[in-house]
Length: 267
Ligand code: KIV
Figure: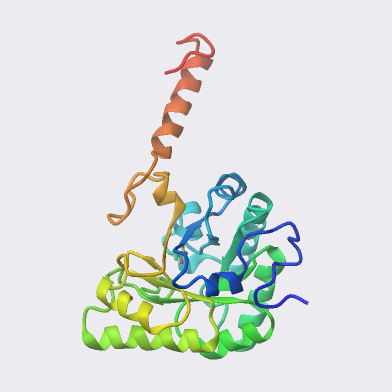
């Protein structure tokens, strides 16, 4: 029976960290998580020493060109989780629950089950959805929480936790999620001092994005890390320029086809 800490039985070859391992790594190991949405990226990232691969609903914005993550459906998530699971046969895969797919505990369990059937080892959802988290865990599926900036509901993309009231609300959300049984919690775009306080307050690892260095790990959108789109967010220093590499390859191919350079010549 599939349960917290086990690998997805549909991916028996997966040998990476389980949700239980991740939860136990607090204070022992800093966690590295990157997103992936397709087979080739997952294949490449699977051997990088990452702790987790997240099939994020950022899929909508960075891979499908939608204006918002809200445009992503459960079907789309399953389609991309399947592709990632084919490429990443070892690393723990987290499937993001898209907007409006976990409005009640029953709906949350149905969605989480579909993501696991597609190949996810655990699921992530946004906000202090405690009854939904409890129901999913009760169904045997590990859950990662997500606090701070919640792109599925917050229109304004600004750093959170700048006022004492907002900081306290985020802190309370994180504590509620940890108490509900989440094995790790993403903290997105939160004042670094507040993320540090949350990290000290909860017993499970926090994984930050634009939330300072005081978290137990870091997550980035891989598209930003590898420079696959022309304008990465300001908090990311891309480690490659895949956008330019694709342009260079396309131009070289077009010139070669037209006989402007001998076949096999670079540029
Ligand atoms: O969808 C996503 O990529 C995410 C990360 C920003 C954590 O939720």
